[in-house]
Image 1: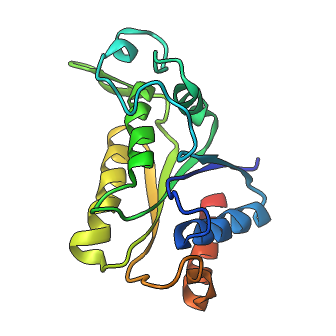
Image 2: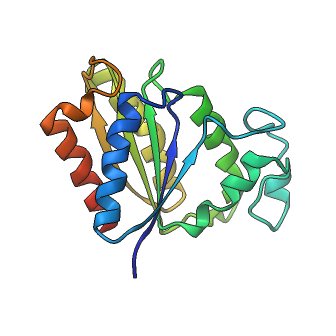
Length: 193
């Protein structure tokens, strides 16, 4: 059975390096037989930016955000996928603001009990990250990676990443680097296997 993979774009630059290497990973996953979808987190409509911390999602039996906007509806479909890939350039040692809003709303997909630990509809899935940065791995991309790896482990998911440090090249040009292009394709194949 083909894996269902969703790539969540966090880069506001439609023709930037992050989207370019993500496109290569997506195409490679498709070539391996995966059912690939994409969500553009930079264009989703929402009533409130991010999570309000109202805890209504934790008090309900449903794994859903109560805000009832396009962002909530989009987050609600994530459990349909086997692999959820976030794609982002590094902005101030973190995700882009657009993607952070998306991630915060994912809080509703897990229930955090005092005695029972964490119950998540994402448990058993793979969370993954594609990220680009102008700087190095150390004290830079590794910090971003941990911000997605640690929650993945907490909710019972496996984790994988494809990181591109030191990518100070013009927008969209990273794919012309043969090693970077192959790294992205290899990651897509790995996600689909």
